[in-house]
Amino acid sequence: MFAQRLERVATIVGILVLLCACKLFKGKEDEAPDAGGGAVVTPTPTPAAPNAPATDVEFAGTFSRTAQFTVRNGQRFNSATGKGTATLTVGNGKVVYALQYPGSDVPTAIVTQTYSYTPGDVHSVTGGFDTTLTFVKMDSNTKNFNADSTNPRLQARRVGGSGWQVGLTTTDSKGVFGGTEFR
Image (cartoon, rainbow, N blue to C red; front, top):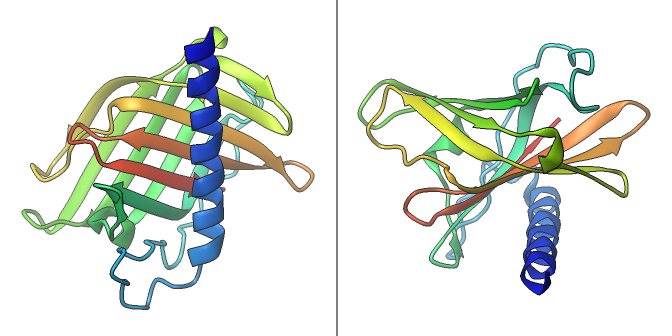
């Protein structure tokens, strides 16, 4: 019980750090990174398809990345994935995180990661929902991407009248922590 509470508090703190970092560093994508790594923010989010009608969760739909940050060995750093586009599609027990960015071994790296959730994984919280995800698979045309398969979580918060701000936090197979904001 204590471990579950501690994990939940750690997740909430992580989300707050993600949201604060995203707001703090928004608009600084053209600046050189500082010694701590700087923030990685998508310069111009690609327009997403209109949110799909609610399916199994209120926040079902397709969202475009608005900001991201990545931490390795306790230091923020610029990830190559931040130079491209990303979408998140949620619904019917599945989350699909699709990335396209300039690759180092291919001209355009295309990575699609799929996660699943059950109704029991979706928890109502003030202002939205927290969802524990299960990594299912990764499809990629590049060898230079590590699956974001450890401790994936989704946080959806209602913004405005009917919009959603969705945060995805993950740790990859090499221990790199990342947080991505979508709208």
